[in-house]
Image 1 (cartoon, helix red, strand yellow):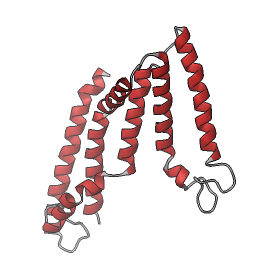
Image 2: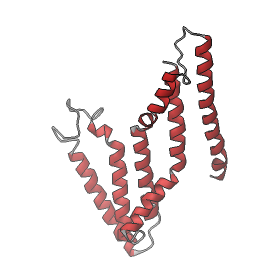
Image 3: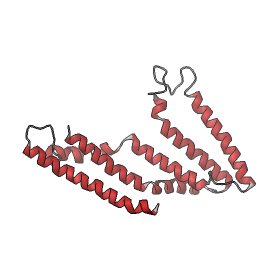
Image 4: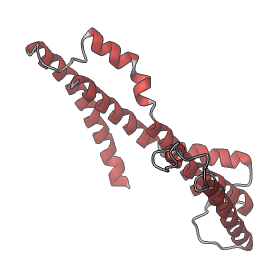
Length: 196
C-alpha cells in the first residue's frame, strides 16, 4: 500500500501534464491545420466550453456512485461487520443483520420480479430499467444500513455520531479516487471536445 501511495502523486502529475499538452497541442494543431476537425481548447469557444461546462462534465452518476460506495465502505469498516465474532452480543447482532439483509433483498425482489414491478422498464425488462439505474445506490444503501445496524447493535458504533463519523471516514478514504476521477474525466472530456 505504501508503494501505491508513492506512485499516485506521479500518476496525478502525469494526468495534469497530459491535460496541458492536450490544450497546447490542440491549439498548435488547429492553428497549423485550419481545415481540420480538431478544435482548440485555447480559443474563446474552447475556453467557454472548458470553464463554463466544467461542473456539468464532472457531475456524472459515476461520481455519485463513488461517493455512495465510499460512505458505505466507511460504515462497513467502522462497524467491524466483516471481522471475526468474539462476543455473544456480536453474534446476536450478526444474526439480526443477516435477517435484516434478507428482508432488504426480499423488498428489492418485490420491486423487481413481480409482474408490473415498479423498478422494471416499460417493456418489463431489468436492463435497462430504473432498477439497473439504481443498482449501485441500492447496493450502497443496503450496505450502509446493514453495517450501521450491526455497528449499533454490536456496540462498535454505539451512537449516531459514530455512524456519521464512519460515513465521513469512508469519504476521506476515497479522497484519492475522487481526485483521480476529476483528473481523468477532465482529460477524457477535453479529448472528446478536441476531436470533435
